[in-house]
Image (cartoon, rainbow, N blue to C red; front, side):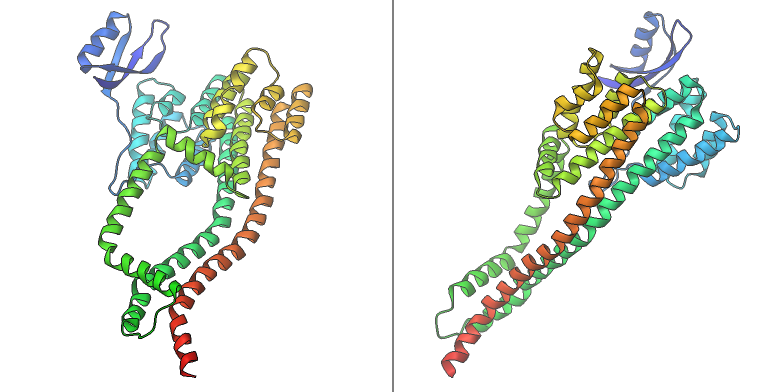
Length: 401
């Protein structure tokens, strides 16, 4: 069975895209026509493009942000959606993004709504984006909705950039120290081992252990390197599964000092997405479902998925959020006030700013702690290796004296 995307016209006069599985395109066409649908086109579903070295082609977040800014500018100038898309599709420097936009353009030319066209692109675009476009189409003010989404993109990119920048220096320190340990173990220490072969006395136990590890690493490097590569590839494949992602996300949240940053970042994603959707006119329950899907941490996303059903049953938003056990009391109180006063949208934006400020404070604390810890830890390891190698020399000098 093959997966197809069919562009069909309904009895109400709407043109929609639907995914179906069938043996052939002709059999699917006959099946849809038998249901009273007018079939415009049936194409095999296309997934993401692949490139070598196990990397998956994906859209650059910066390219996507610039695209939305340009699209909002063109629409604000009065240029129709179809013409705006044609201009932007030709101007893209990324061949992959150009191909994706050409598929969107084909859909829009066939009468498919802009939001449905982006939603049909095999999960390449966030659900939040499609939901935002749908709210803009229903309200008739697509430009204003796009402007809100652009603001959301800019804020999330700023938070992501701050996190990455703060953790880059400790990561570089760890990488350099690890590289130095590898050089010592594979090149420097084996040279000393050759020198100590003719040593008359018994070597200290620390020296023997380090020299044994170095010799084992050096002689088995041909087997160790491919094994590590296979292990890394297998680990990456496992991490792409639901169970692997859930395990990694849970571990992230339990890391001392850093876990709270991941926690607040996920809550910031959820709350800011929810505020953006509500500001665009999306109903609360639908907004909760879409906002939950924007959270990248599965350990946070799973309990958040139970909020929308509670709200649909009539429970207040703040109490539904409280039942997850994820939100601080202060943010819950702010949401409660927003619901009571009818200013939920503005209060949610304030809550997201609260999380952003908490992330910045935590980042400063983590960086101030990690840098000295990394220096002390790796300095101790390297000093221990060097001391174990020079210890026999000190012993010889003492005996000589």
